[in-house]
Length: 340
Image (tube, rainbow, N blue to C red; front, top):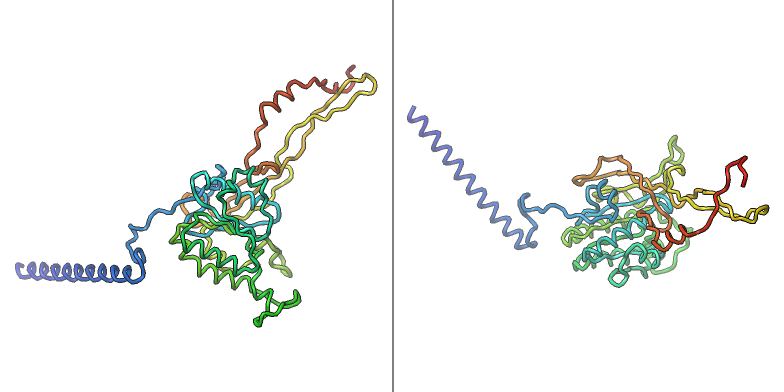
């Protein structure tokens, strides 16, 4: 029995020695790799920090997504025309700037609205606006450089489909191309290349990137045509959060009451009746993909009222306007059959 016990102890000691030697060897290799490729290339899982978030600037949407954009990663917001995509970007920038973060807006559609941006709270003095780019490659190279040099915190690309690759515009010899020339899948290939080239810089610089996408109809010729995002499958793979945006039912749109007045020809008195008018639309956001903590499950939907004048947050009526309305001497329209 004593011999068996001693044999087990010796074997256990041998295993512990081998394990210690192996761990020491691993640590030495990790140190060598970090020395060769840069600190942090190889580390233990416990050393990976919890990913920070960038607020969308809209309370309900932050709760819906678990806190907003993920720093160091890509997110996508896509949908049809005029469904709130750019406004969502404006809110995100404004909130980030309030926290001292530097934002870059790639206005590839040339639709950046200075007046609306200021109204949403954007500080134009510190916003980096990338606009005068002729090709997709120029925009992508500018993004990569900003990320590589770690000079920004948030990047918005508006939009993916507004990028025009050089191969779409010129031949390999520098000659001009006609719109008749076939450039099928060229943007998708370039987007895949861009995402592969920029992902490490985005991660290392801890930048939150929001890519805005447009809609097209997919499945044409089949039984169920559907809305789909163009730009290649790489977009879907690299995104940590993908939001699909659309307009909801007209009945769910925000409305406001107003007074329609006229002068009664018989009495000469001013009459009015209260009417309702639509002042925006019901914005529906659906989570198509999420790989982040605290986010609602995929395919969950959120309905938020979108106000034409002020976006996702209703513009407050000033005290002066309220007093002016209260002091208006108006006579309500009498009920039918009642004497005026």
